[in-house]
Length: 444
Length: 176
Picture 1 (cartoon, each protein chain N blue to C red):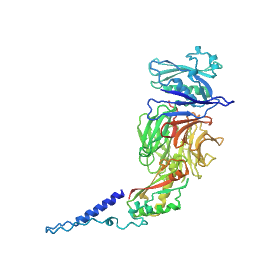
Picture 2 (tube, rainbow over the protein chains, first blue to last red):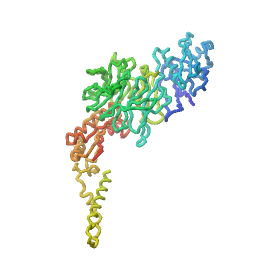
Picture 3 (cartoon, each protein chain N blue to C red):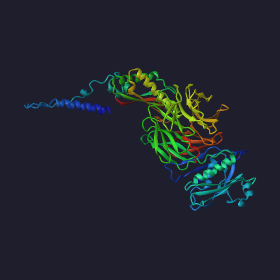
């Protein structure tokens, strides 16, 4: 059961219409609450595209959520596309010959996707066959077959959206990804924390671990199979590493003091973390195969929130050695840390863009905290969000968007903003408090 | 828990007093009057001097600083303010005079800023209280600092009134 509502349209005399859709996603195996996605601002120059419902030629029954809805939802959420409502489609071509481009031009569509789903020759899974056309030039921009395993139709639809995104923007898509986040529900004795994983569109939330004690700082392994996180279940903060599929986990660090802020190296062989066993929080690197620990910082300041650059050459971290928290970086082999953020009262909890040139931070001024992007080369900040209690930025693996935690009244919610700040989307959990999002790497 | 202690103590004293009355010798004597109910003063004696920080009864005595368990801090600071030093001294004196005492200093921060940094801030506050207590006679082995950062707020409103209540160290006795 699914429904798409058009909330309202606003238009100024000179600007194109802004459509705002409320998309309610019903997950048939939802653990508890649904993740509702609301678009709260839009891009007036979004590309109009028509995703024609796929022809179903597969042996299995068609899914509850059609392929075109998943693809349109992804493209819409990116802020760069304006997908056409299928109810307005007068025709539903399934092959190039049956496309009447003139009709689509009249509907003011620039791009057209047609496709079908069928069972592969070996009878296993599904084949998605699709073609993308430029409506004005009639040129075929993309023709592809994507094969997925049984039960992976949603994943296949996300891959189609990725292909469209890459073809039309030049940037790889990040739709076939997952997000992890922490929820806190209930009060007092009923307070319950959960670490949840869902598809990046919010579908299918699954609880990875639950606890009456706080959970924080989820961090994905580079292969997308494991999550490291901090848990207070033993009474003190401790770092665990858990296999998402099997649920098996190991205690990585639980000694005296703080055990926090786990972060995997790009090759997955090492984990940076914060330990205060020497008396104040310092950054350490743990070799995962041997458990060997190396201390990276040595300073009376709070040194925490380490994160690796995508090329592995630096570890960026938060330090208040200069008085208030700022971002520093140091080579994993050691050395004197150099300060990175040069403006602002408070900069913490960096997330590095995949190109390594930009970092997203929680940027504080007075009592207000916003997400800002620091360009390492130009040494300038771009403020992305209105605040005032924004934190935990997490870059999409294609660098196009930043997921972050914010507040509405007393409720914690997740929002996503495009890297240039032009499009912002709110993801609301329908009960409780959501925080600490972490965007997974691209899987498979 | 302390009330159970006191009640048990009272019962033990009462039992001891009645036990003294039994006669183990063969010659029966007219049974003396049973021991009177021990008057309540026997248990509590005089009210404790609230300034005697070695008296464990003051841990529950609202007149005494020993019953105060929360130290509050200024924003972004971990210095123990002058108005709270008396409380810290009281607990230091108690720990110094009770080698079995074990204290956990739970450090907290308000919600502003990032969670992991706030773990560090909470710990810094706990460490500040621990340093003061150690300087005044508590043993290192008696004290443990645990930081909860912003994860255990006592209120959830985004204003200074609530934030100031969350910037705290809680003194928790795990053994007296």
